[in-house]
Length: 113
Image 1 (cartoon, rainbow, N blue to C red):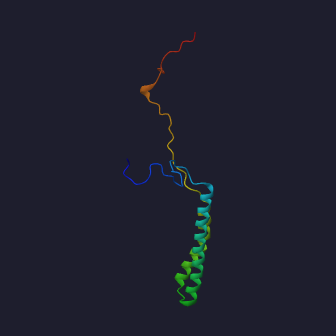
Image 2 (image 1 turned 135 degrees about the horizontal axis):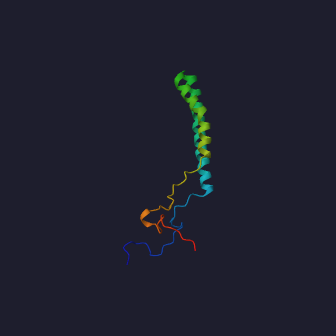
Image 3 (image 1 turned 135 degrees about the vertical axis):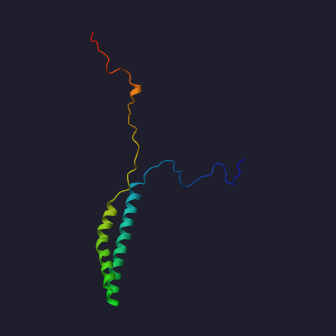
């Protein structure tokens, strides 16, 4: 008898993940779109904040910093949206020759008959 109160054969709504499979293309695309929208939202907020700061306080360095942020964020957003997930590094099992495991002596004389 098991010590937990859950029945031995409980039905789960989602299957157990047993592989290191990548997310589906739809999930990956949705994540990239979400990242793009968030970045562009930050850009819009930076530009509006720059306008408000300039009209109320005239702090030039802050306005310039927010304007530069608003200028470069579209480029950053596009680069991030077009970037896919990193490729996993897999070890490739290549043959490593060992001199102590050679089958024939390379200095042997070959006799054609």
